[in-house]
Image 1 (cartoon, rainbow, N blue to C red):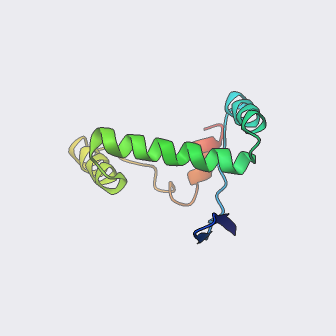
Image 2: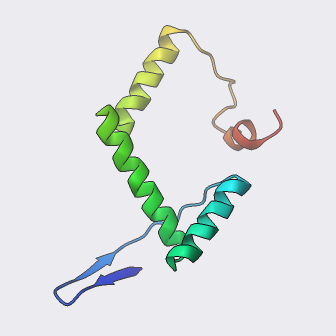
Length: 98
């Protein structure tokens, strides 16, 4: 749990654990930025995520849910078929050799 304090207030933010994959270059950039700004890498990552999410919302005006629905409709329109085992082997398809 992270606490943000000032002389006027204290905010108790509940954090969720997230595991993601980055390229070696991204990992290096995060480390360098954290060191330069004297912050933890996790804090740098949270800031970058917030900035990216804010920027994507303000430019497209479309929520993530709306974008996913639009993508699903496009898949239906184009009659895209996924493998029958895609839900049980999602990691293999995303990160594996297939």
